Length: 517
Image (cartoon, rainbow, N blue to C red; front, side, top):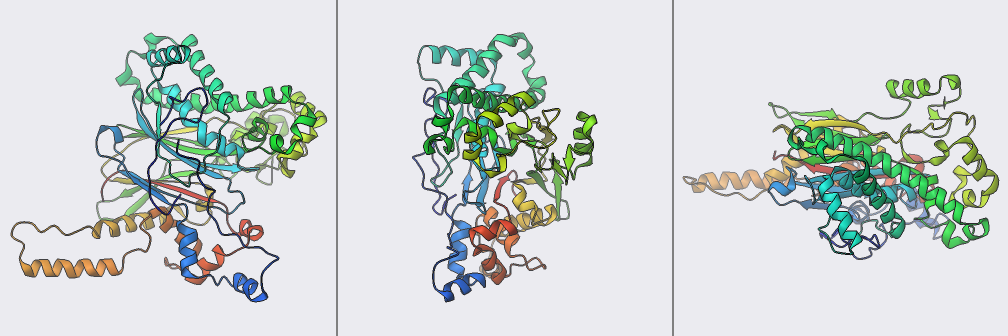
């Protein structure tokens, strides 16, 4: 998310575990242009309605939050060559988040994730900041966890668990500090108390199973901790205290986090094997280059919503007495589109607990937002919503060139095959722009021909070096024939905030480069 590329590492924001990662300085706010619907001249408003913003403004909006990073070759990259990412807000504030990091301890690996929030950005923000720590802790050998616990007990510094790939415009804010750290420490302490070190002997043979188990455990535990932190906070505060603006409206308030929600699509890549953990309706699609040079799009995730027959049957099977009410208008209890998500405790807490909140703490609900002010209808047999991720394993082959992770804002506008085709063609074009290095025997005539060919390719090269930006440009400006219509793109980007959400959602994309074209 920046115009000027930069790579930052830094110490963790958790107040009592500054050794857990390497954070950038406090960043500026996410860039977007704001158009006031009720101000300015008639000519200006007419220009906005007609979508007549300049090409320079279009580029500035599209590229404000882009980022790309090339990883150093070697074992530490686990087969990942680099990645491109971008985010284009529609909601204000933006409800999407993204994360990327390298696991430094244990077996290592590279983690990428996109997170699509609803009922505000609080849950997506918390999960994007915390989930990778839970994955790292879940995957660490018990011996390493024991060393970690001793170091914390003795207040010694320890080798960081994560190296974050963040940049100046990343949406980083304080993430709960002490509470977040205590919850994470409780998690590793429970692992030390309940698991047997002898079970870790066949590490090579069990690596895949361990990664799958670690991802599932991390998702479950973080969702559990978000719920418990909200309950503790609720019990320690009074209505008058929570109704103060600073507390009730804080992005990191445990109550706000737990009452909002988010989907998550996370990929863990280690030694050429990728595991995708999906929760909700974001997607991971693999770009495969066939022998004839054509591109195939391979889904590595399934949507968890009413459009997935298996997912629909799962929900109906878990609530057999509520066949007519558990899914209405393709939504859970008539309200929520995804059937799996973090947070959203008003679809998970017991009837008694949720009833008490609605009866005694209307101040909390009003502080969070309009969407949660009334109890869900037909709330009889919770939990209705699951934080169980669906795991897909794939060994990366030579034909697997890249992986596209994106929130549903992209997939609502573009078919997966078109996405893969655009990325593949763009990577090919970038490859062709590389400098010509003459080999032995190259004549001046050969060199002139190569230079003329390269000049033609450069003249027709894509205008975006960042592939995620290239995708967003096509998603919003597609003319129906595979090209971008500048007027359509300008109109989509100039919509006022109150109208933009009617036409598109927040769009967040990360493209992971796996093999050279």
